[in-house]
Length: 126
Image (cartoon, rainbow, N blue to C red; front, side, top):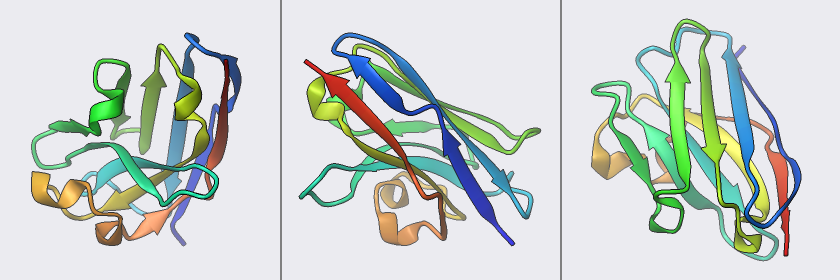
């Protein structure tokens, strides 16, 4: 049974940092790309970042480029999201997900992701 469990969310002031982690279990994920999505109240789910299993390329939505960094540890089946210079508009529930796809065109589409975690709340106060 595949499980994705996020941790590291919380309340932080604007300009602060948080490190989100996602532990995957139930199978080997070395041939799965791993990504982070977020959903704010009243808004649709939004792609945040992903890392491809094929070439380890990383992808980010424009609003987080230069502030967020995604990384993975295949030995531990984990993916992390370092979030710096946080802004109130980053407030959302952040979820990790995995997909067997690995090319740029597929990284941004949530429908391409097979497994999802339950999410962790990130709240950035102004």
